[in-house]
Length: 302
Image (tube, rainbow, N blue to C red):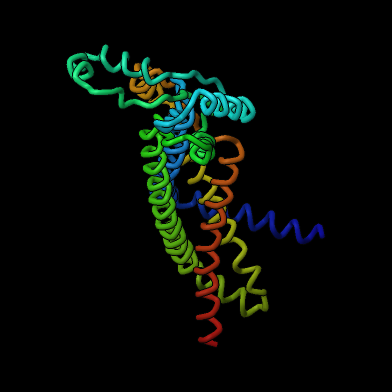
C-alpha cells in the first residue's frame, strides 16, 4: 500500500514539473480553457439570479376571480368560504358597482361609462397569494378556475411567465453551449497531452519495453491533465466572481427603481465543487484518450 501511494505521489510531482517546465504554453492553455469555461458559468449564474425577478419582487401579485353575471351574494360567500379554507392569502371583494366607478374615474372613460345601457362588469374577488413563486400562483389559478360561478381567473404576472419562458430558453442554450465548451476542453487537453507524449516518446517506449504496465505510463499524463483542469477551473471561478461583483451595482441600478430586490449571488461552495469536479473529469478524459491512442499505436508497431 505504501508503494502504491509513493508511485502516485511521484507521478503527481512529475506531472507538476512537466506543467511548469513549459510556462508559456501552460499559461496560454490555462487562459484559453479558463475563458471558455467562464462564459457558460457566468451565464448560468446570471440566469439563476434573474429567476428571482419572476419569483420575488417588492410588489404583491394579484389573482382576480371574476364571477359569472348570474352570481348571487350567496355564491360570492361560497367562494370566500373556499378561499378561507384554501388559505391562499388575503383577498377582498370588488362589487360590479365599485368596479364601474373605478372605470369611470379613469381619464376619458367617464363619458363612455355614462352611455352604457347597463353595468357590463361582474363581481370579482382579488386574491393576494402568500406564496410568491410563479408555479404556486399558477396552481392557484387552475384550482380557482374549477370553482362554481367563477367565469374567469386572471393573474397579473404574465410578464413573469414570459420571463420564466425566456429563462428556460436561456438555460437550454447555455446547456448546449456548456456541452460544446466541454467537448472543446477535451480536445484542448487531448492535444496538449499528445504533444507531451510525443516529446517523451522514446522514454515511454523504453519504459514499455522494460515491462511497465499501461497504467504506469498513463498515470503522469492523467495527473498533468488534472493539474491543468484544476488551475483552469480556479481561474474560471475567479473570473466569474470578479464579473458578478463588478456588475452588482449596475444590476441594482436597473432593478431597484421597479421595487425589485435581487440577490446578485455568485457560486456556492457546492456549485464550485461541482464545477471543479466536472472540469477535472473532462480534462482527465482528454488525457486518457491521448495516452490510450499512443499506447495502442505502440502495440501496433510491435
